[in-house]
Image 1: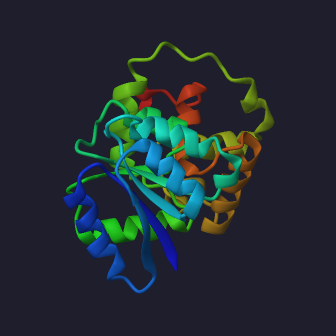
Image 2 (image 1 turned 180 degrees about the vertical axis):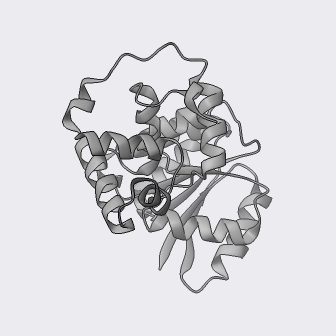
Length: 221
């Protein structure tokens, strides 16, 4: 059973998500929070598998709450999905950097929300190729030129290549096709890269790929 925590200051939004998710045989809404402080407290108390976190809430917002939860070693298995009204919300990139596993727009289709919860609980990141390119290109392009990161020295040439493809938004299957290897091999390379860099999940690999200068927004089609 996948335990979900809903964090949103709008009661109707929480009620709608609860009704949808509780109707699934493998998902249960374990709790709700109306602001960031409550979300952090509930996360520590309930230890949910997935938190659906509104990015804009009164008091402690979703961005700050995400950072607190992601930095708590006791909550290392908790996955956070940021909820936003706009795909290109200026805070989404910061949320990914802070430890979120991806994001959803609030008007996403019900079937997509259910799929998202299951995917994140399974360890996947919610970063489709199109959204990844738009999001990262939009905000990383505003940042200054990154200095090469010494952390890249821990990676093999193939692992750097794989991380660059993750940064472009490619799935394991697409990486496998690009490199002419099996999907299992591609998955292994991604997993090893995450371990070496201490990344919580695939989303943080994407952020690191750009922040380290391994991938640059200008290279994207």
